[in-house]
Image (cartoon, rainbow, N blue to C red; front, side, top):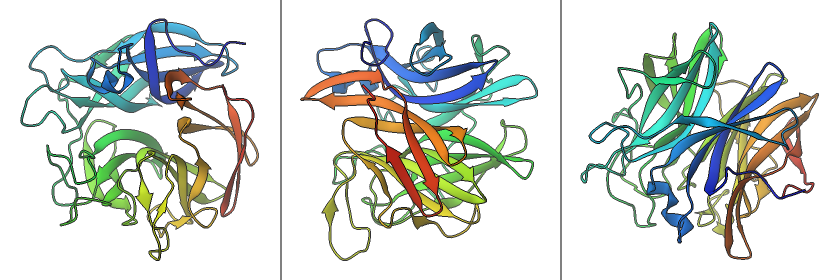
Length: 324
């Protein structure tokens, strides 16, 4: 079986899912292949779409969303988002950037709506979610670690008849490094949002990307991905170069205190497979799919095959199988 999935001639990375009528629909970031794959982030990134019944064999579908027209708020690249079904309509929150020189690194979150998961219309009031400067740091410059600002990667869930979006962000502080956090916003209709204080800020991460919140057996598991360059200090005693993959913190309450799973927060430590997203399976078992990053110094840029994870109280265990 050939390794992974990507539309012909394109790189694929960050992804999100929705299951509908017996099919898993995956949405993902895509761009045309370039000589230097690291240039893909600014290369007219669009949101691709495919479907599958088994999470292995994928049928390509039309591109879901493209960058806006010149001068629009999202005319540079589209970045990671999420899809949620409400009243027989599908709501996609997605990250957007524009070409303006003084804020091309700044990210905002827009909304698109669909009746069928194929045809999407961007909301007229976009962007619907912008960082609240009372709580979050937004700047067009990079920090000393070479990392940019963050207000991206929304993930949508419902709790107590309210909708929430968690977002990769940076907490407002004098520090410009290791101030990554997971922001949270609240809504009644998925259109108008109230931004709240950070849901999780540890003071040790410089990036907390592509968050996902899973409620399992009355506990909340907050997953996020950490890039290869990350250096963090989980116990504030010694620095450890680790990152490179999936981390998770858990709490008995949505707005409670979050603790690291597996004692150190690390679920899957690897620079080969990134942005693992979980899908419920049976009991404590979840299926996870990410995208294949570098192998033997070669960028792959394809969806992985599924692997299995187990969530058991304060532990999240990975059953690694062949994901290539």
